[in-house]
Image 1 (cartoon, rainbow, N blue to C red):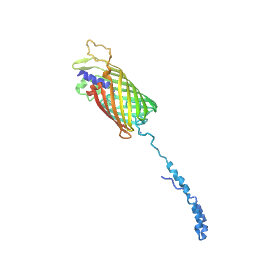
Image 2: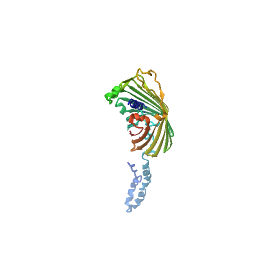
Image 3: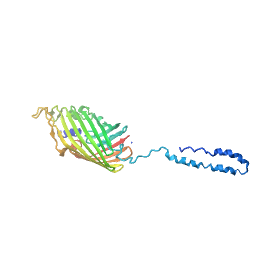
Image 4: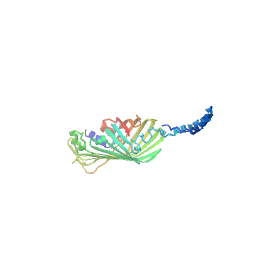
Length: 335
């Protein structure tokens, strides 16, 4: 039971009028009316020949030059700046663009259990984000993404987040839960260098390098055992390669895998026990316990609405969902 609770805490740490007719210049020819004294006013017919200022027809040709904005080539393509998926990629929202995201059953620190995200494109490649779902229960969760290189075939961004909370802030805990974690404080800081490389209209590669710093500070009591006031921490460095295949202009398939190069954690020890000390001893975690993979299908329902379903594999998810295989869902609306 104690391991399951600690496992959940650990998993929580690791997460776009027709123109007026021209006046007839032959009209002044009507001054030839004195010729009307002659019975055959047909002599005035010649001026009528000037009536065909059909030469003004070219003016009608000018009508197509009226202002009209044509849709740019490829508009609506999921690789366009206002359509691209920002998750596990280097992309930020365009300047002045809002993004709203609703999701469930995520694993990352910014989306564990549930996500109600709000993001805004500040400009110059900078985007700021908040997860209101976590904030609503007492956990501060915000992030920023700076896309400082943006070319047609390569983009590079730096991303950082902060996830912080205290047990006594989490109002949804039961009394037993408050007694267990009320004195704890959790800090999670993921740092990411992300790159995205569109190869063709239908293919894109992504590659992230990530370092995660996570600590749980404080003391707790579990089944009568009092654990010392010392941090329980996780340190992880790894890479995430990814592949996106654009099946159509409105559908893509994504595959990525988190591959830790180094993962280590400390272990809580009973106070006064034989191994009690103030030193945080980190022990490596096996690769088989920390790697993860996901397969996603993303679709555009309208110009501003996107939906994604993903299937995940991760042993770290056992502490959250009780299984290593699980789905997740999200809707993304842009304004």
